[in-house]
Image (cartoon, rainbow, N blue to C red):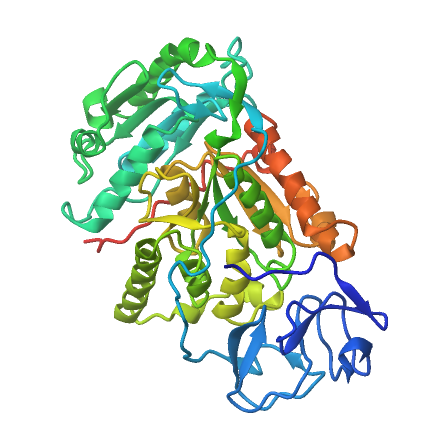
Length: 520
């Protein structure tokens, strides 16, 4: 299962550092450490400068010897490392080592919560529960992006305050556009993924109604898209093309008129108490740092455990960012078959990178490294803490509908907009996003809740962060306390409380379907 983290940091002779596991070869600095600083409980003296969030060696590590954090291997010494030295890219490299997948060896029964948590949701006619109430405009091809945005802009409250007057229950009209749909293999995997993604959004419960707009002669033909996704035209779902509508001006006018027709029905909703089991939360981390796996990710993991106990669903993703730590998930798979499905996706990524001349260790990013992360193994071990301690109950490919209840995995890239787009297409109606470096992100029609890993970030970007998990590092709250607080925030957000990213208007430009096909 995911590695554990301490509830509170320990101060050692005035220098604040954290030891995560007795077997670790490093501790994590909470402050800027300077040469000569004594770490009393470790019995070592710092040599050189160590930035906050970075690693300090606590014992001698021979050349090519394994280096452990979380009690797990995060890389191998590229040169001998001595106690007190700063352990980062100049000392640490990737290497091969055996992992014991031990399928389902640590799976255990999840105990249901004694009382059912609820939130104020919008119950659709078919019984699905919405957390937001948007009208969506989707495009089959990039050629129809301009008209889709023009239609949505007509209903922007900041541009035309009267356009939605009298429709206070409608959260807005949003256009989700993309850069694909043409010059793509009509029988290939790329088009199938695009259509699956668009289909998932078209029937997302957070959309009351949807317009689907095309050019008319693109590869991604609307009739085929509707047929492959089991979609039908009705009062809540309309489609048309620019070519059939008479060009740009007439298409925009037609779209505005159709949205006006949809507004009365979209507005005829009210919130009511519904069980937390109707929550499906996508788990994301971006702009990570050395604290991500210590504070925000474990806090989110506690909230995930609570969500699962209440019958809800959490979707872990970003396959390249669990790479090297997948054995901790396979051990908690509810069945060996599910664990093997996860390993199959890992093998697909290894082959995908190999045939494109790429490396799975192109992660962490430059910002991640500046924040203290050195290898993809280290990032992965901290990243899967978002999943908590519950079983892995299923594995899905990109944008596939998530049917299971509990903690599941969806195969996506590590790039946050692409990953979250797949999660929402699969049914995620909320995103919880941890960040240590700062991230500007939103995800219409699903609200995105931002978790800061440290107080300095929260203070620096206070209008971006919904919750400060830096309290764990400051010693003013435990991981368990913060996790419970986050779970309540998730319920409040599902009930209509706007997240920070929503107040800034994020969400329309962050719709980025995964493009796999060769573009010809």
